[in-house]
Image 1: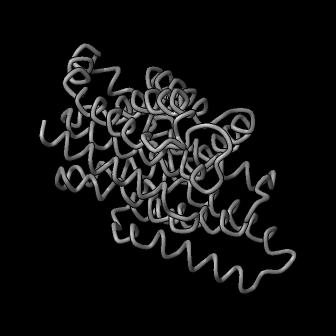
Image 2: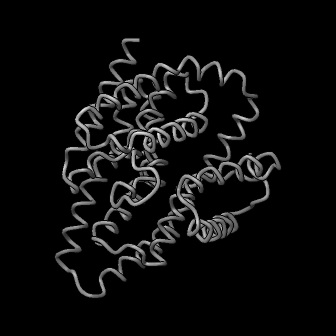
Length: 304
C-alpha cells in the first residue's frame, strides 16, 4: 500500500510539472524518457519493461505531446501507470496491462476534460492514479482467469506488430505532408524518437539522454539552415528513416519467412498497407485493430 501511495504521488507530481512547462521543455517529459526511469524503482526488470513500454507508447502517442489535436493526450500517464502495474502484477502480460490501462486512461481523459483548467484537477488525477495502482490485485486475479495461450499470443503479436502502428503514422504524416505548425520541431522530434527507439531496443540505454538532446540540436540546426525547401527535405528524411529502421524496431519470428531480404520486404509491405489504413484511423483504433490482427496471425501460426 505504501508503494502504491509513493508511486501515485510521483506519477501525479510528474503529471503536474509537465502541465506547467512550456512547449519546448515538455520534450523532457516524454514516455521514452521517464518510463524507464520510473521502472528503476522495480529494479533491472522494471527498467527493461519501462524501456519497452516507453518506446511503444512514444511511437504511437508521443507525437500528441508535440501537437495535440484528437485522441489520447495523456500518453505519459499511460506509460507510467502501465510500467507500474506490470511490475506490481508480476510482469505477467505487458500488452494486456497496456491495453486495459489505455482504455481507462482515455476514459478518464474524456470524462474529466471539463475539469482540466480547474485548480483541483491535480487532485482528481491523484485519486485516479491511486485507484489504478490499487487495482493491481484485481488485475492479478483477472490475469489468472485468462488462458495462458491467449496471453502468449497477445505478447507475440504485440512485439511483432504494435510498433508498426506508430511508424505507419509517422510515414503517412510525412507522405501527406500534414504537419503545418512548427514542422521543423515535429520532424526533429520524429527523427530523434525513431533513432532513439532503435538504440533502446538494442540495449543502448544511454539513448534515453540522447533523445531530448538530439531534439534540441536538430531543431536549432535546422532553424539555422532553414530554407523554403527544408521541410520537404525533412519529410523525405523521415520517410527514408522509417522505411530503413522498421526491421530494427519490429521483432518478427515467422516460420514462413526465410532470409533477411524476404524479412525486410514483408515488413515494408505491412508498414505500407497499415500506413494507408492509419490515414483513416485514430492511433487507438489502429492499436486495437493491430492487436486483433496479431492475435489471429499468431493463432494461424504466422508468428511464433
